[in-house]
Length: 230
Ligand SMILES: C[S@@+](CC[C@H](N)C(=O)[O-])C[C@H]1O[C@@H](n2cnc3c(N)ncnc32)[C@H](O)[C@@H]1O
Image 1 (spheres, rainbow, N blue to C red):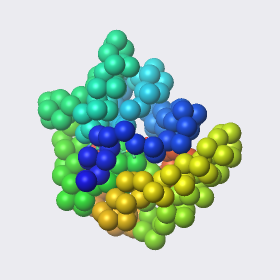
Image 2: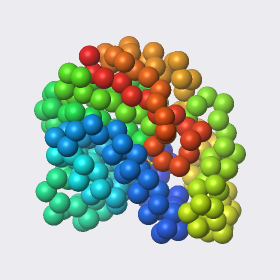
Image 3: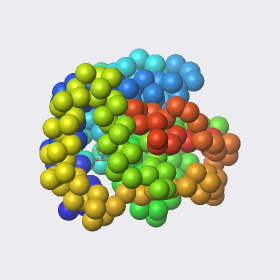
Image 4: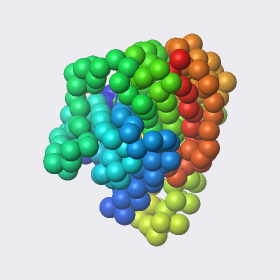
């Protein structure tokens, strides 16, 4: 199984409905903090189901959601079909976004599932679709040297604060026996050194690349980067 196939199946990444709700609520707030003007047209690339996307849509003029998993796209269309500010895209829809039309592209918790070549290809696509001066946000990037234990600690802290600690403990046990753990062991996750990712972003035509804080989401051990299209 590939990561793409994994994300197209039902999975138990969220240990309870409350975990899923708090997670996506936090993502929406983190994305909103990056939007600088209500006129902005934003692409959330690798959005996941994004059930709180309406919170983001309220902060901008148009929100494109793109997730590679067809099952995720179907769920998004069911939830947001009537929201005039949200456009759910498939792969050809992303290609058809006019060049130079986006104010911001955000990819949260995506690039760890991509090879370096896939990331480089996406950096070129995003560069083409962004307006000059448009903003790129790569968040939840796993630093080199980070381990699964770091993620477990961050999840347990989030669960304790969010009131789903026992469910998180049970969830960790089932994750241990899950496809996620198997894939994480077999395929691994892409990790980056801060300086290397900044150089890579710069090599694809972006300027003002820098690490920012806070990261989007609960795990502050992971990294957020912003850059502008030259
Ligand atoms: C860990 S989830 C992140 C979802 C959401 N951004 C969040 O922060 O909760 C990764 C998502 O990226 C999607 N994905 C993986 N590879 C992708 C690609 N090449 N293009 C678009 N989406 C992709 C998966 O289908 C999955 O829903």
